[in-house]
Image (cartoon, rainbow, N blue to C red):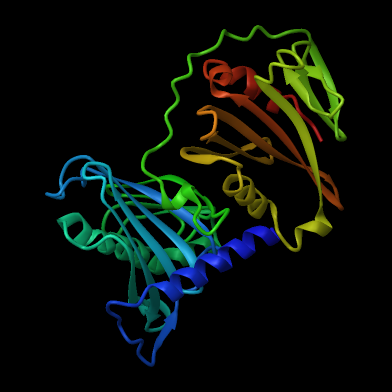
Length: 347
């Protein structure tokens, strides 16, 4: 965590020193810097369909937003048709009070590229529109973790998404999110396409003899296909293939520093160790226990994995997290098999 914090600080210092501002809005007396819904380094990348090319129509473009520090965002546009990239820094404020709170865009600082094409000329307005809707509706998070905002077209907001918590808007769809691992993390600064999986489906899994495995104090409903390793992990179909694994993490409540289960879910999603595939993120309950399902792409191997995290009450001092991970070629077509493990698990 210290390493990540230091990297975020480097990023903020570097971009502030190197790049002079090209224009600015001087904040008024009633304007307050925005406090974004993320720690510095949190980012979200969106697909803008039908917007690529010099004419501003056709193809796909990506818009990324990253909270570098305070009320400042790094905003990046990549056009897949022209291969053009534009990166700017911009500060944001709110004006007014209460129900009349409004977005007040601030200083813009160029980092890379230029405003030349129609798309480049208007892409910041898409960010402003989303931020305005978030500011007007974000009090809804006090009652629920996800909600839909209908004014000006349906927008879906989910608490775990960094920066402005937007999952989708008309023409704008979240494709990935996470935290910077370095000051020039390619996951954000060199993002040019969504991960694709070309792996063929594996064979259908034939359930073995039911086995109740005790893993970290949790009774997990596996079967004879799974093999226990000395490291505490159960693997399928054998101890070396690593097509799938199952294990339990026990987290002391003293280490959570006031975090709740929703905060834990956010951490698992955004520190997934690869490229999070946002379209597959699902939050649901198994009985009364919260569970998260998501997919992660490994850019080094090109493989995708499907992952579950089931959060179980352990005792007053700890929470147990059942972790199931399987490569997509093993998981796809065998969803019911892996779901059945969740249903046969008890704290």
